[in-house]
Image 1 (cartoon, rainbow, N blue to C red):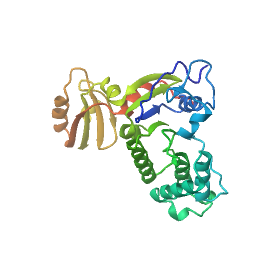
Image 2: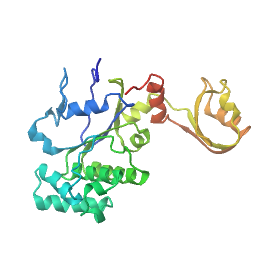
Image 3: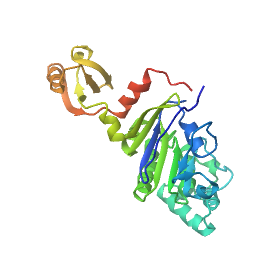
Image 4: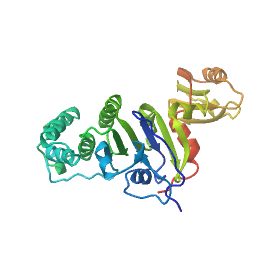
Length: 287
């Protein structure tokens, strides 16, 4: 049994790359092999166009899924310490740590011990420790796990700012909405193998347009009519519809107007969440 099998992908400089898949798909194993925590049985891995060596590690920032802060240390102290481990001078590390703590709304916690912070706040400190030395390549394993929407947005903004400054970012997740907002390209892994790989726009184009996104009031009985609808995801007052073969979206609209009050109607490409469910939802995820 393989944790990862015949996996191949390329990440362009300055882009955000999403490594996606259900729990147990092989995302973390892949990242650990990239970082040489685990060694592959075959194949090769190159970073910056060459095999990873200790001399290159200062150019990389890596945040593992299992966080690793020293909980008895003070917040500023631990952030500066991680910067020094990446060859930053002490004064430079302290100055940069203060800047990031201010940016992520942690300035008032500077002199608190890490253990006094909430889980979400500790996660933001871990992110700061990862990016303090301004890495050229940033690798994040499930960076949004356990964060509330405010902190998810804060990390998202920080990642986009780093991208705009030229940082290449790889992050693993199963949160499709974040991938839609952040990624230039993706690799979707299922049971250790790539089932989709490439620029996000091309990946979505493969699944065509003609999907219908509709917001409505009332009982949309037509959704259960296979003559019109091949499938749908209903969220109450909002539904994503896959029209039956040969049924144009306009026919869906005409049928909807006869049954419900339509407040929004959009013809769109499939969401990444829909593609994800289509490809792996009925195949089992595993742990």
